[in-house]
Length: 401
Image 1 (cartoon, rainbow, N blue to C red):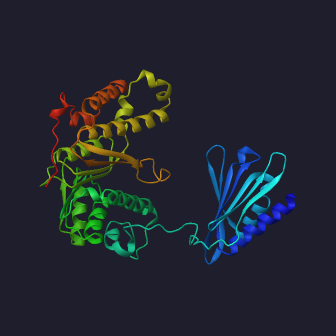
Image 2: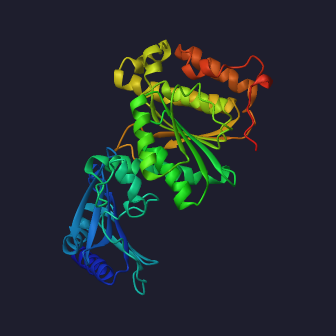
Image 3: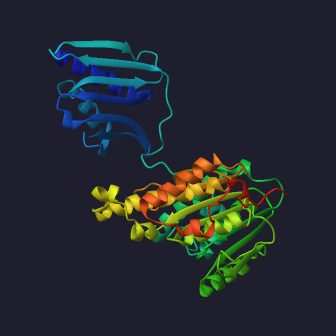
């Protein structure tokens, strides 16, 4: 009976694969628990159907392999000896095999009449990005991201993905931006990869008028950015050398961005954004060293005695305190991932949209103070944006036109 079941599984799987109706096969409830669940998903590469296998181990890790159609079929054939449940999903149909503890086999469902499905064109399907060498090759070349033929340099692949992920965050908050011309500031802009990308996105892809400002302390970097803007003919971009906390844009910015401003530079960028009355703030923090140096909390010593855990706690708490203080100052805040953490651990983005409504005023301020006292710190952002003694006195700057 086991051999008959194995043959049926192999036949059903192979037919679904050849007919292009197979969505996936899931092999679960392994007899050896450390083996974990196995998922098989077909894809097409170079006109040939292959199968991606992903094995989920008991320790949370996943192992991926690419199999030929024949290799995948043989794997399914042997599955009843290793797994107690096998599910094959084809179109809107499903076939299930259950193997009981006593070895009894039960089939249910059918793949008959399953409709074709569209397979991924390859295992490494090309992502769809807003900024591409095809449409934006001029500035990508000027910034050294691509060569003259439009090929992205190997060392700039991560930067290219990073700026496109940031553009996705901008698309997510687009409803919070006003109609008409936009005022955008990049505080601690550095070499301004993001500054140029955001300007290009709005002016070229969205047809918006933009006044763009990039501010940084490094004179040579600012000169470089000015030269690039001049070569591109982007005359609505202004780069200034100076302290972001002292920068005063000609009007309240609609959007303030900041990409990986190191350590407390993020605090200066956030404070500058709030004081200028920014409507939306998008900031990716970097190297949160301040709290790691200052943190003095006996209650957390069992964790902070380990340097790597102390750094993780310091990073998380630094950004949590930043987010809460922005809420106190009248912003709705979301903290999420910018990019895959496997690419960089600096993958958090703070997204703040101005509402003018203070979050449960007194309770929030008291909570913030208690957290700082517990950790033994007064964060730089709290020094730049002081907590009020009376929440009603908060200096909320209107961003209304």
